[in-house]
Length: 281
Image 1: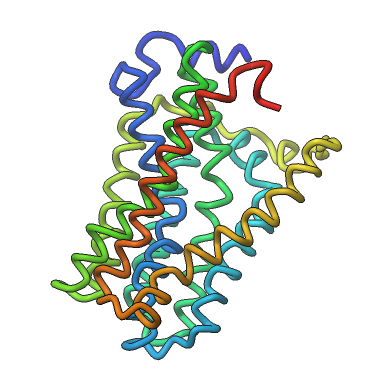
Image 2: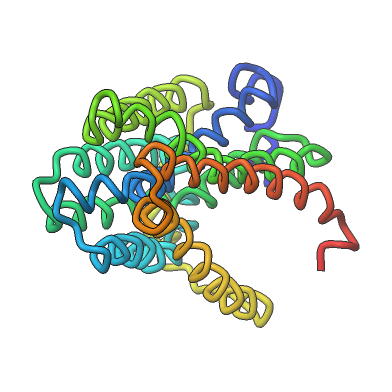
């Protein structure tokens, strides 16, 4: 807590403002899952031009989230050890690498490898952004900042489904994915320059700290398992369904993912404000 109070001192917030930090963290959350949203939005093009089957398209989601699930239990301890600045730069760098590999994939094998690499930013996203909020945002504003930065996940869906899917019609689907990779690298540079320096990395003991997850955490994890199964299925197959069953063009079908993103942004911000102390349960 002493370290958090020091980091939260005047001048510790990126750009000297809470909005600056909020924008950075929202961007980081957007890129943490960008690769999966792009695969969903570009699904019709991947099926037609890369020879990806419908089954393998769904397998990309399984591999991405499966990797993230394996890494997530250690994600918080990794962030505690290296600090939020290094973690956010690593997150955005890994996202850029995954996107670049997707754009370069000659076939399904490298595509799955790229999606597995994309599990790392997913695992780091929440602990890194939450720790940055604890370090630099005054307590009364943390709820609003957290809700806004969480909407970054849906912002990523919007970006994948509208501007990037539309760009794919002009520069090709690989060009659209590489554009996203370049943007993620720029965001990594932003995080490195804007965030205050981390303390020296802690010893390896932090990574071996025992978990203290209680009953509520296990219940929420089980709840999230079923919730995530439904959400991931929609994100993966909605665009392909629009193209194959409703006769939509690839760009219009991709825009369906953007619609989900807009609704999700409103939901994230709205529910975070509604879940005030005493009402959250």
